[in-house]
Image 1 (cartoon, rainbow, N blue to C red):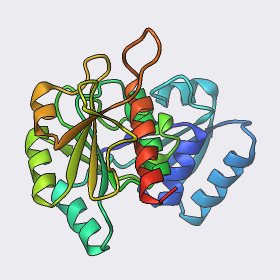
Image 2: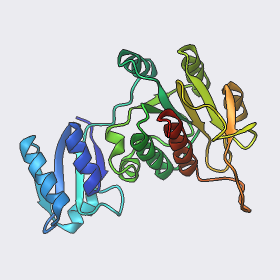
Image 3: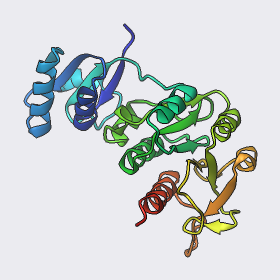
Image 4: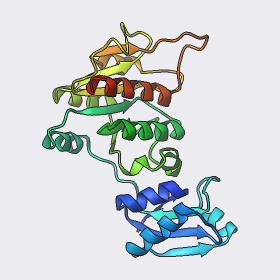
Length: 246
């Protein structure tokens, strides 16, 4: 069976809690702490093999330096089909709340967006297949385990995916300095997909033109743009504030 590696105590713990298929877990010999105890207990309950190994063995398996003495061989990440996600939301009779990422290439940004999306209660994140970060061990680590709970749709054509959202009655809102309204002035209470552009370049013109409207974040300093994950967090929580009447 083809496997992937995830690193870090919290990512491995959340993979165990979520029920993700895990082939084995490798723990640095002598590692201690509450998270280690929980990993051992959950692995035992799920009958997942746990090996205790030397530093050189753990580092040989790890795909990043900040492994915290724990790595796991897991089944490849399973992306959602966009139509399946939308059907699931409709079946639950919930108001769609989604994030669309336009060519976010930094895996740390993708992981941070997934963490914010989970915290804000978003239904999922949509990413393109090309010229964009995919879900990796770095994304899993940066997301603090949120990747195990937030559906991710990887689509071949982002513009067509936006058309599908609009056909389903979802308003598509782009974060762009060309926006006519501030993010606090726009109505973010209905069926919503927030579009966040790439680091430094923002939303591509084609994608911006597909949006129903654009909103901008106020900038009072000398730098005229925000990190993509920071912008996503601000917009997500403005939508939460409005949707909960806060």
